[in-house]
Image (tube, rainbow, N blue to C red; front, side):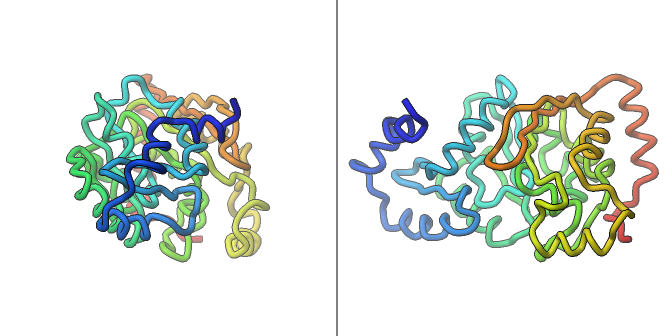
Length: 266
């Protein structure tokens, strides 16, 4: 059975398509749950979540890498909140949190959370700096961290948030601060795969920073054991298990003292 046939034959998808149309409130929410990026689109019907086929393909790959049992979860760059809400509904998950710097994403995610009454979930308009400086204020640290499609914005900045780290080490250190077990990671790790406006930024900065998969994996090895897990669309997917030896912890503390409180500028 191919993936699309599997998707179509799932009981809840058939139920959604044929027997349980969304109510008026759900139709209003659903209009806000589609758009760019399309691989995060989903719908609600009869207070259940139904991923689009594109999202379902990602869901299958990503959830196979979750901690078992999944006890706590954070999505960095959560978009419309599907992964956070889906994780929160798992039986052993005590807290599931999403952060994003785009207020409309946080707003619609919170509206869905409130409508579905998923009380162990939360969404915040927040940056990685905010979370890593005080993880406990957001329910952390978290057993499983998800970071897909967002890393290049943390590194280079974006139209939505100009803060930029320009440092694999600092980003990875901050991720290790909020993580107790694993990081599920996928990103554009080569400069020539960046969005055009970030390609121009990278070109202008030149050799001041080193942005490629080799440099990323070298720095990641300080904080995580990195395992290849295939591809998420065009980009590599990694399962990254946090290192917890005392020497790693001591080095991390010393590294943290050398990092600025805010993202660096060049």
